[in-house]
Image (cartoon, rainbow, N blue to C red; front, top):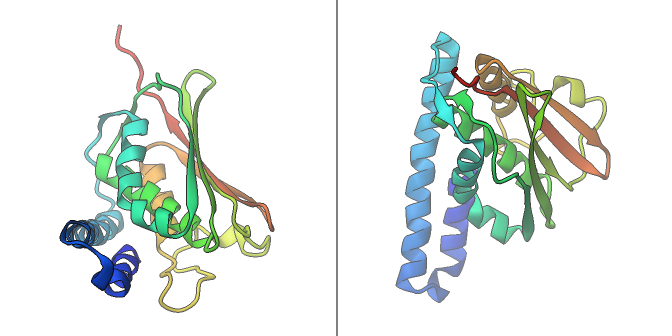
Length: 206
């Protein structure tokens, strides 16, 4: 989806772009192609139930790195990014590429839910001393109540043909479960959707 959107931008605005802008878009396409390769690898790893390569991670850095991958789509859709992340956030134990895949899926879903613009809202806070809560919300149309219980089911999608495979959220769910965490969704029709990820904080050594 990212590759198609960026390629369409390059095609439509090609005659008005200077060399630097065109090269930046081409660079983004190459990055997204690499991400597509990583997603396929992630699907294969997921199906083989291989353990991710865990390391202590700052979730704010993972979020910022992933936001860079969708900056063109955010800009073209007229979406404002609103971050509420404390300066000092406890580390989690995670696989960087897998978690980037998680946030990429959530960000793209949010962008597609707001074709006429809106706000992508990202909030992080500590809960009960041992958990980190990460919320990813949008101000889109929301999810129909009849669909909400099924959104994490494999191959379940309400998008038109060519817009989704129904794998993104099921893979996202599996990745978070492998990290010892949990993900849930809350939505109101006409008011948007919020996905909330709960992850264990890295325990401090004595």
